[in-house]
Length: 443
Image: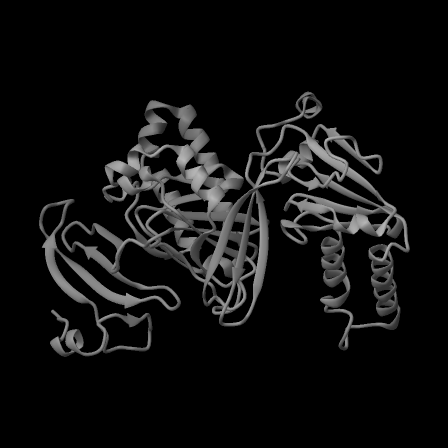
């Protein structure tokens, strides 16, 4: 049986990076009781470090008597200050090979199948995306023989769902894997680290009191008695700062968050991230409320340079249309923004012209460059008040806003139209349960 050498404990770290080439680094073997046949088996412990993540302990038990085996992982560190949520868009088969650390406190979801594995129902595991799918299939198949005997109808439905899970491994279409862990000790591999992974988003969040209790963290009695109103007052009066990672270089950075009340509209959350390492800056705005019952289409007739100073709140779900330029910017193209009309037009120009990779280099053509240059010149004319246009903000979520400078009186240059969302728009917003009557009758 191998042991951890004392010089390793007192000298270099006992946690080493995962490597198949290091033959000297062997797991520690411990004789232990098998919980299946109650005879002695062997537990192997490996203390290792996952690149760009942290140290973990991998344990694997095997019983030579009954052939029962079990593998799980435990974090070698403490519970993190914030929880973490990984959202991975699986687009190709290579994504199935990404390493995944799933702590036992993590919730695993596949929204496309309405599938969820609740926290503390599985032991922690070190696997891949494909391994998670296989483990989910094995868990569902475990009691199928009993179900087929006692409840054939339920067993048949579960068989159909198992086939859907297995078909995900063929990656015929995109699907989403969400791992939300309040302990902050789960992880999904970024194969291009430290560069940004376009298919993977990482969000850190503050745990609720209930999540602290689930993790065994005793909350102060005073905190339990605090009202939600006090929390909201704190957010309104203070700029909150929390740690995150830069979306460009993945270096530690800080994000400032402020809850702001927009007159004659609603509360919004403004977030700004500055990275000291690479200088990257991002500004993002989120609606402080839920999705509205009706979508909103706001049309402004721009006739004067003073219109450029109007405040604009463009949510992630809002499209921007300028009919005179035959231009439409789809939702999420610029993300959520709280700016002025001039700032929005400049951002559109930067996105379409200045930051367009096809304007320069071998991929550029004279015709394409000329068209983009003319588009940029027209945007500058609009900003200077030399060209009258209509600017339309079409937001099916109803969470975008364009300032009415005549408020509370009606604005003669602006119209606001409320409309019922289509089924396709509800799908885009993730409101799958909000079906239109026409769709239900047709199907």
